[in-house]
Image (cartoon, rainbow, N blue to C red):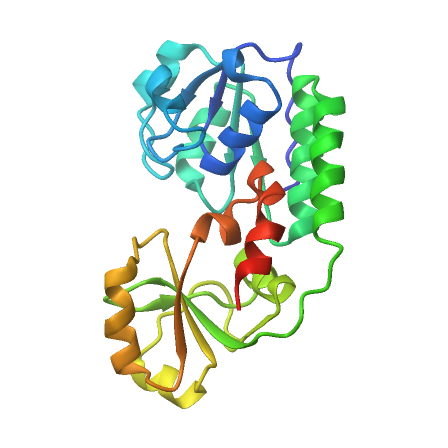
Length: 247
């Protein structure tokens, strides 16, 4: 992102502002060095209950962060908000990732490994993820991936999820960038083979499948694990196996 972040030594008091990067830090053996996380840092299960909750990914409680006296804050350009990061960066080392594809994710992991002195463990994760994604998945069909309803919001180009769709064997029919709104008429016109309902950020559940089957009878409606498509930390170790199960 064109920013330079300096830390005097390997950090001992880390605040993580991104759920997928929190999970990575834990998998790198840094649990004891993490002092603050967001309310959305749900993995590992129960971990956030042991730490100070500093708010959400887009609404930080600065007083709680100040009380933690962090020597490193780890965030992400998309998941966090610019004003909040800038306010924190004025006081603390704030390292921010910017991720659009798998290579960005691997570089993020390497960067965190260097910052925290966990290069060897990090290399093991990076190598395993790289091997996992070497496989070419057979073409499954065209797809529209929904992350919200009322309004319906989908996923377009220039996103990590779009690349994961491609690696999984789906052709994303949305050619606009980022996260455009879409209507039922748009979906009918595009006539996808699959409509994928993500489990996050909107909590699509099995109960929503019937609704979308009625709206789009020509498409296969599937509930998918949004973490597998959008979490770009060590959860990528699990993603290839999950992707093989889709079809």
